[in-house]
Image (tube, rainbow, N blue to C red; front, side, top):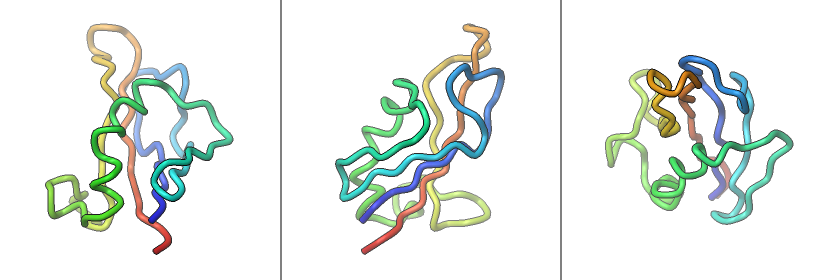
Length: 96
């Protein structure tokens, strides 16, 4: 099972990501990307990526309101205090 991670929304200003950027986690451990990846983004994804590979997002409370097949998480930057931005990511399972 592969995961496609897309930048869905940015609150504030992110110096790394743009809305629409994406990267792929292939076979659960290979990170494939043509765009830079912020360490805050990876730190936010790491606790969840194995669950995302094997369970439906709705089973553990990460599903979107409009599409229960996609999961959502955001980076850990507290943008209200740092003056940067927090990024909301959409995660979609692909493959078998």
